[in-house]
Image (cartoon, rainbow, N blue to C red; front, side):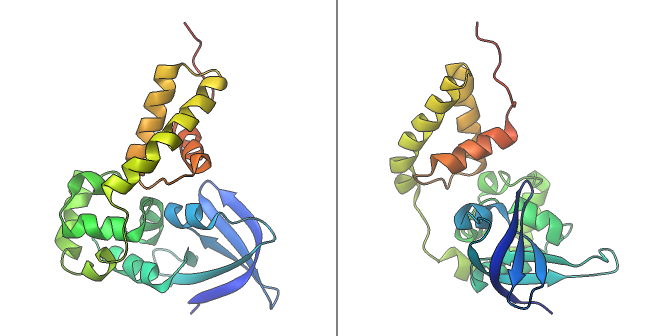
Length: 213
């Protein structure tokens, strides 16, 4: 079973987030990256990369799936997360758009709003997550986590920068603000990284601006 990979980034796919890691033995492994891992690592072709790997294969999923993480703690949380009924490895990898401490804290505090921001996780899914994992992820929840006040001190400049870019591309100011605010609601963990926020906006918003009126 594969639990760790070190090598060179041979290929990057942003949607869905995935990298091919070329190891020293000359073997290339295709690894799925949860969004928060992809945004944190910012993998580029030719750069070195190290990943803690979750490996899964089953009768229902005959092709192996490898999911990569920056550290072992995040992988351990993932292994707990997929114990929730109806959440398999592929769905979990798509759902994890926020850092593990943020999600673990939301589980421990029964924060339904934060949990329902995950793609594909509605009210019922959030309830199942809390029922299954509350009390079991306190260690992950206690890891360093950015407070709401700290986020608020940084987001306005990032928000305004991205709104300005969208307006320069032809989007109406009101539309640009709505798109950016929707992206921040999906993932409230953006720091001083307008490029990451802009990518999120483009992934989830109209490709071309509406005609100005």
